[in-house]
Length: 174
Image (cartoon, rainbow, N blue to C red; front, side, top):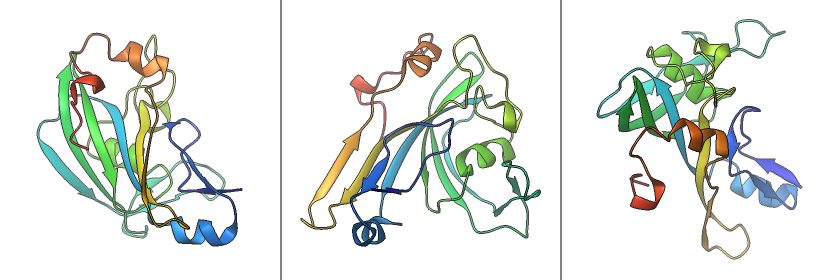
């Protein structure tokens, strides 16, 4: 099995594995992922972050925005604000390591719990508040569209308890 479009260690949600290298090569770069994130501060509307990402220290995991980096594009849409936090729907155009986390921190709204990029942990969120909610793909053999959804984990659900947000109400535009 080969992981296709991996997730950061602190990110929950859907992961895709291919049975072999051929199928992995057909799927690589062809996953339509939708994330839900919880950022610090208030964001309204929607936007795009187009800022290159690089690794400032080869011996460390942390990434940063800088001219010397590789192209990185992230689309976001604010779904609800509560208690100086914003629930975001996020889609990446490119697939860089820590892309969503770096871009949210870059625009001044790091993900709740993401201490690596300047946010604070909460009673419930001891990791970056980022979840790959849905992945759409074209099956490499059957050539059929498939959609996979991962329920929000308990830490994320607890963090959202004071909001009115609900996946059951269809609050996501995906």
